[in-house]
Length: 73
Image (cartoon, rainbow, N blue to C red):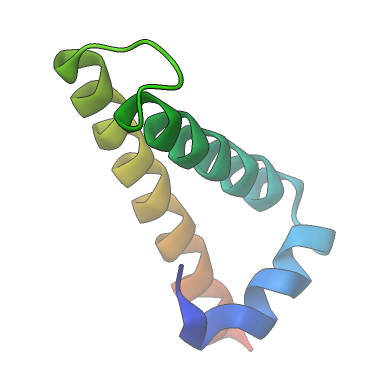
């Protein structure tokens, strides 16, 4: 996710607790969605779609933080 911001992501994960929490939530959702799609964890199509929307919302928030941090640098 966001390879152009790899260094900034590493920095923010250690200096910005809000960013770290959002990043962790995004990754947890990604793993849960993958398990559901593979049939490892039970989940309906609707549940998966809801989780994907939440994951996208988190990604948008992360991107916003990254853009602001990059502009401030």
